[in-house]
Every structure is written in C-alpha cells, then in structure tokens.
Length: 277
Ligand SMILES: [Zn+2]
Image (cartoon, rainbow, N blue to C red):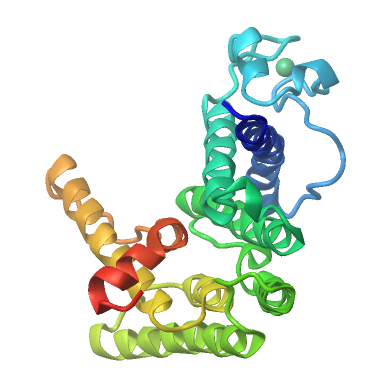
C-alpha cells in the first residue's frame, strides 16, 4: 500500500467518524423536530428519569453497547434505532466520500465543497425518512427550507469546477419542476380519486431534490423508483397483514431512497437508459 493509498483510507475513516457524530445529531433532530423543540439546546437526557447523558456516554454507536442499551441512572431501555442510525449515517458518509472523491488526486476545494453539500442532502434524507415513517410529516428544514442550500451549493460547486453539479439555473428550474410538478399531480389525483395521494411535504421534498440534481432525468428516475418501491412495499404489507390495507403509507421515505440510489448510481442509470456517457 502506497502512502497515498493510506492517506485515502485515512480520509475515508475520517468521513466515517464525522458521519457517526452527525448521525448522533441526526437522532436529536429526529426526536425533537416533530415536537418543535430546539435541536441545539439542552443536551440529551433520559426521557424517563431526566438524567443528562454524560459526555463519555455520548460516543456514537459504541456508547449504546457499553450501556447495554439502557440509561446509566434508571436502566430504562433506549431504542436500538439510535446506534443503528448513527452506524447507517457513518456508512453513508464513507460511501459518499468514495463517490464524490473517487481518487486521492481529486482532493481539492471543489470536491470538498461538493462533499459537504451532498452531505447535507444525505443528512436531510435520512432525517426526513425516520420522521416521516413515525409522524407522517416531512419537516420544512429538510425539504423546502433547504432549497436555497441546493441552489447556492450548485452555483458554488459549478463555479469551483466540480463537474457533476447542475448550474444554478438548472438548479432553480429543477426546484420549480419538482415542487410544481408534484403539486399538479397531487391536484389531479385529488380530482380523479377524491382523496389525498401524496402530501404537500412530498412536493417540497421534490423541490429540494430538483435543486440538487436538476429536473431531467433525475426527478423522473426518482419518482418512478419511489413509486415502484412504494408499490412493492405496499403489496408486501398487504399480504403480511392479510388484507388490512394501510392507506396512509408515507411517500417521503421512498423518494429519499430513490434519491440516494440516484446520488450513488445515477450516471450508470443514464448511460444504460440513453446510451450517452
Ligand atoms: Zn434514566
């Protein structure tokens, strides 16, 4: 292994550590944002006895294991979802690093800015997935309020010479297409089926995805992938529960999965479908 290989491996490790730390913050967001509580203050505490989590028990992933998944003070069990989300986000950040910076020679300002920019998207996607699953809402912070981040990041990445970001114009058109496009579909669906298909939160999320990926072909791919995945899970749930159809299945998590697939495999999909490299 050359020193450059070691450097590249070390950087991936760093991406994993940052991912775990931000995964820990993601847990705070997932618990507090639907309750309209501040994600910055106060520090985490046991929901049962109120004892604050000590700094040395706040280590992502591992603390849950040495505490055996319980509060140090009152032994109330903590959900295994906490370390799972931390580990999952750490892994996603390593994969994102490898995706955005495929070679150690690519490490420059443009690629590092792009890494942080897409990192914010991943953070929002994982966060809204778990919030939407539990509360059937998509927070504005993770959808429409992040659109300026999408447009500004696209402008900055293009300016710095990152080759895969849309221009700010494409980003604005993408956001408008995503938001208005889905909003129109929702209105049509209401007209035809006389009930809600998707929520306004889904339109706001598609606006964000449009600002990151531009409209064509990303949004088309994401919506189709999410619909196919949603149908598969819907039918599976139907069979599993023997006929009690869960009508209010949130769509946000499927859009998020579609977006992650696009982020990691988008160019392969484009080449395969259109023949253009
Ligand atoms: Zn406790």
